[in-house]
Image (cartoon, rainbow, N blue to C red; front, top):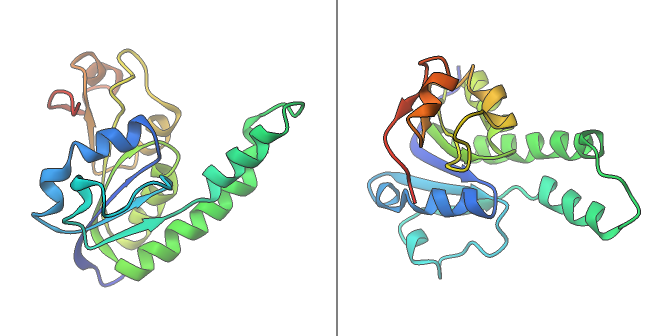
Length: 174
């Protein structure tokens, strides 16, 4: 097991996942916090990020998505993203090694998967917050990390049953 630092890493992808992560801004100042995202616009000018120690970027999946969507004739499949997932895993692992966080909190989506495996591998605690957009079924990320996460938080009471009682409901973030 690796030596962990007293750091909380908060991770999400761009869009609604990032908006939900920003709803946790009150926690950023309470802990030595690092934000990991693929949101190219994330910077210290965002008031919620003024208290974080660092902002890190894992862009593999976002870059691949941009590349694939430029070719309008190409059919997008899960297989199209396999190399991006491997690169994303390597990027997340390098950032994990830089900070060695004691806990990782993720609002998803695809960035949660490699971080959950990395957390389990190195002894960090992993908290997954399922998106507010899901009321009656798990996301793909939730299906994968829900089994490994130290804690799963859902934003609808119906989702507690979807996770077979292994999730906690605290209300919605935004």
